[in-house]
Amino acid sequence: MHIVRYRSDSDPRPRVAVLNEGVLSPLPVAGMFELLSHRVEEIERMCADAVPDPSLGDVRLLAPTDGAMEVWAAGVTYLRSRDARVEESSLKSVYELVYDAERPELFFKSPAWRVVVDGEPVGIRSDSELNVPEPELALVVNRFEEIVGYVVCNDMSSRSVEGENPLYLPQAKVYAGACALSSGIRPAWEVDPSDLAIRLTVTREGAVIWDGTTSTKQIRRPFTQLTAYLFHSEDYPHGAVLATGTGVVPDLDFLLHAGDLITVTIDEIGELRNPVVAGKDHFAFLMARLGGA
Ligand code: DO4
Ligand code: MG
Image (spheres, rainbow, N blue to C red):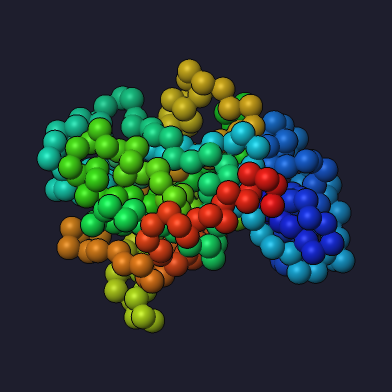
């Protein structure tokens, strides 16, 4: 079962529903932001009480974010990520220090409306030579700091921009098409996230040119430590998504190209497939979402 946002042909407004074996059961909320203003046990009850509506035929699944939800991300939570940053960076020790520190690295990734979903393009910056996808498990957290569920995240990143100077991290991480999330939220009460396989595949002209796998078992920090730091000095009245960091990073000679297809799969959570484009001009469609489209 997943919780999804969707739009049907018969109703232009985005709705929220439970999606179970291809059948939608609408939930009595105005958006994901309203769902995440409830406690997990209430959300679980709402999902259990939702009534299937078989008349909802073809619908379009939307990003799982709306309202004032924010996407944040944790960094250097897997040993492979620490080693990859040390290799690429002109200032190696910051990554070694943050991997071991009590306080995690957390950074802002995206407002709700800039998130791209399965099938939409992800971007690479036109001023960046070295770009990678980062396949990550992301936590969907309600306003009470409770983990409601999980989605698949691709934390697209410029290694060359960040590698030049770690203070360029916001530019390496936040740009058009940099944040992709799977549309379906797998509820926390249905899944044990402690040992889930995360797979990344990059395909070019039909052939796999890179793939890698890790497990959530490899993460150095408990998820609740990440959420505790996120909520320590800020409130998220509409909830938040927190990507938990990557454990899969290609070697430095790997260069993502426009036209590549990225697939991220997390067992029991979902799959995210996005073609790669270069430059911000491809993302004008996101602006339309501000007007509610
Ligand atoms: O420190 C840079 C960001 C690292 C990151 O995004 C990750 O480890 O996933
Ligand atoms: Mg990352």
